[in-house]
Length: 442
Image 1: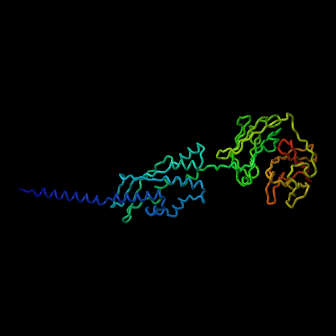
Image 2 (image 1 turned 90 degrees about the vertical axis):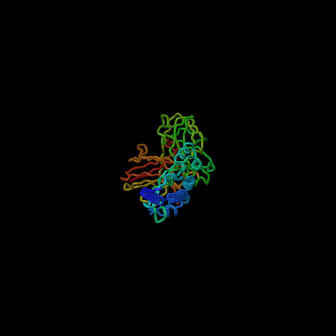
Image 3 (image 1 turned 180 degrees about the vertical axis):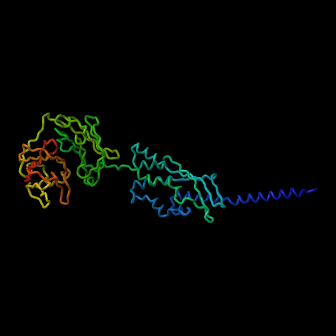
């Protein structure tokens, strides 16, 4: 048989060339190495292993200490709510590697693979829980048992000696996944206030829950001794004969009285009669903590006598004529701050402040008792031609030696010569006078 050596030679060369080319491609790829590196990286990411993440990243701009601090959500540093929220979200972290997407080239020192991370859809969970009036515990449950969201990234690798390392020095692949550490600061739930902290409730300065000829009504929560140490955050509503007429802003109060006011001074739309008194009816006040729980719900009756109520004061020289039990030591302070003079009220025109000070002796009941007062000025010293120059409602100021009412009139330009009459009452109607005193300026 005649052999065609020319054809055999050509065939041999072709097979050798193909084998050579195939061998180069085969030995250049390292898909398994890239997939193994991706597995290690993804596992470290969802397990929050800061040291492994840094060790698997080529020349990172972040350190193990940086990541460890970023992962820290301890209750001691950030509060129990933040700690619980972050821990719940962390428990939902997972990943899946798309092995079909892997590429690799040892010659070029490059590789890549697609990884899909999953994490709780915590933003949607929060919206749903808040809409349902839920609390922190409900939010944590919704995170753990609710829907998840996917965050897909293509992770690039570089070959460093024989190791495939993630080519992401700035940690861009992690930012979307770990965004919940920042987002969690925005999720808060109002703490409930236990009704066990309430001693009783009362309609302040009413006659068995009945008010007559008033411009302001006030429902007070009287806390227990433990409750007096708590900062109360709350809102309240007022109803008139069953119809909602007022909703307060968020309020903060503490101490002996947790106060919920209503009247024209708090609601410009309050209905009043020709004398400025609240119209008659049944006024219901409901007080809520910020979690929406009812702390108090009570109703009072408002009546009017039908006649005008005017105050015709009789002004005394120094001491208060009448007052409430639990307040004494009436004096004027010297305007220059050098001391106090019992029962004196003498000032000069170069002074700017008149102050009538009263010390509270019954702190249990009166440390937060509001008093309304007006100041009248007469150049002649005659009450009959005096004109009102100032009015205010104050509660006692607390100092190291007790609580003090500080009834002041200030004129920064200097006091005018004449008489200043201070009239105090329980409210702006003047229907219950507490004191009337006179200061002279010469």
